[in-house]
Length: 417
Image 1 (cartoon, rainbow, N blue to C red):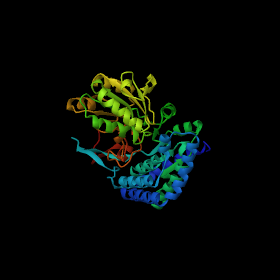
Image 2: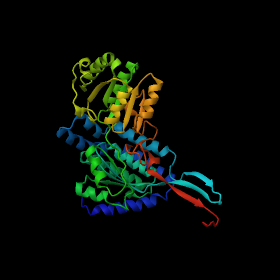
Image 3: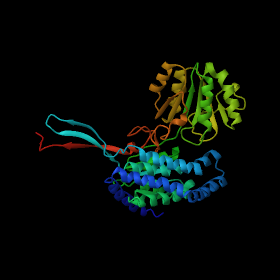
């Protein structure tokens, strides 16, 4: 792609965002329903493009856990379509007026929710992100520039054709959704420098991508950082429940950012739980990397190294550590966590409250799998990302998180003295 085209594409997105900001919710919901129908009706086209990406990934020796992040199936396409319809059914966040009050001088003061404008999304793998991001930005009245990774190039190009056509047929500007090809570093830097045209950049991927975007952006950045997610099994916990949480968190989809990467076990439960965990994970072809205390209770495990703590494996690999107390578990999470997702399995109300209060993460869970930190599972319909920074959102970002509040003031001739 000619880098000189990037400012032009951004200007087109800016113009589209101005038109979107004046549309009503019904028009935007109509576009979303068009998208849902188009995804289902063009499955063969989408699956054919996706096969090109997955075949290339397998030929390159990509692990099956990471290939799974690329795979589209008929069921997954239908699930994406349902997610788009869920977004369409949500209350329109644009135009919501809050906090109206009368000042002593008679002014009526409040705030109204408005779109951010133009959002650039830079992400890796997972072509479903393309659909989720397009749907959420349309719902919230924003235009979006989507730059996926080279591993999903053909899938994203096919999705882009389907999305843009559906938006245009609904009477909205096609340039509200633009699919950028994978860009080299020079072109990406140019994209990140479009101050005045781009209002927010959301990088979603590995540590290298996040660092590159943060260091080169001349526009605000909201980070979707890596998911180093822990499950802590507390003293006296329900061990049957703990085993279910470990299996679901690690194995259901190990290549996702909310998969469990590290299991922390209170010493009093290690002898009872860890052999069961080792047996089950061995059956499921999960590699266990255990600390010296855990290792004797986990046949088939290998010794963990310092690099295994705080590592996002995105594969069927689990780090396991025995800790002496809740305080030790909290210290481990504070040191090695990534502010993404942290779970505790406990019967203690007091310790569950401490976990909820003291753990700093975008989603903190009690007696539930880390896999629930997901926009769809938390009632948002879908997410454009899981923010691990705190301004202006923390956790899964739905349509409302892609808006901001502006002040509105109504008077009858007041002047300031």
